[in-house]
Length: 332
View 1: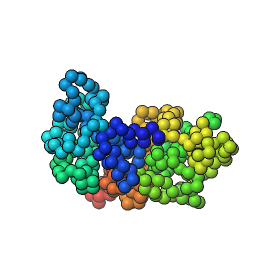
View 2: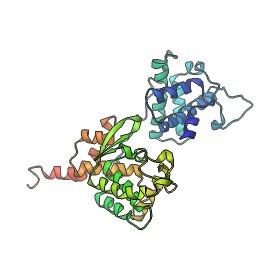
View 3: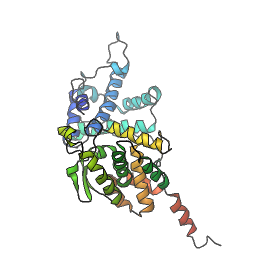
View 4: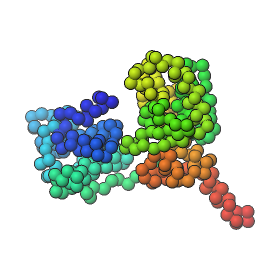
């Protein structure tokens, strides 16, 4: 985490960009991961513009990644046009093989920066990105495990491995509660009250997760094993629910490896299913078998916009099939 923060706030970035990242962090409550992504997108934009505008010394032939942007000022941005930004989008496609989704994310980053500079910081009078359009994106259906595959995965975590009970507990929470990877890693024991769990989700927003019977059973089976090594757990991680083999709070990379291992043990495609796909699975199973309405599902998953949740209304072919069968003319 410290290295990520140092990547954001350093002397290699222009002052206006550091000011923008401070705004995202302190006012908008964006996570470090989000700001790191914005840093990559906007740094690439500025490096490209410096090259495109002929601001790189002609006697130096540099790879775009080697171009320094710390000397850029707002004067450079004041000369930008919509055509300059489209030149950058063209560069992304032709030279970096970015698809429409990657381009759309970078365009969102660009628009957010210029909106801040014109309407919040008010250091620019004109927003050159206001008419910048994103490429049309096709609808993508979420990838998820079927109910039988989910049960097979849970069975695959039952072994004599010393961490199998911990792993089973984590995968149970993924499949039952629809947690994000970062949310699972950040769970503290003190955040659990009876059958509820308070977590800090995307955008530092707190929400309550209700733990069902399977989740509670898995957690309480794991806790005695965790607490048996209580003296070995790092002092700063004493409250963490899930502990790694090195006695610290488990990290995202370790959880990804654990999920991949058990996916393989279950005979499923290790490259297709990730912790985020288990979150998709949880949402799909709740919608398909639990008759959970879309608004409730939005609250459970912590989606800011219901349009994000609505992808789960398009995945249930059985409901569509039964709807057609229910037509009174279906037996004629």
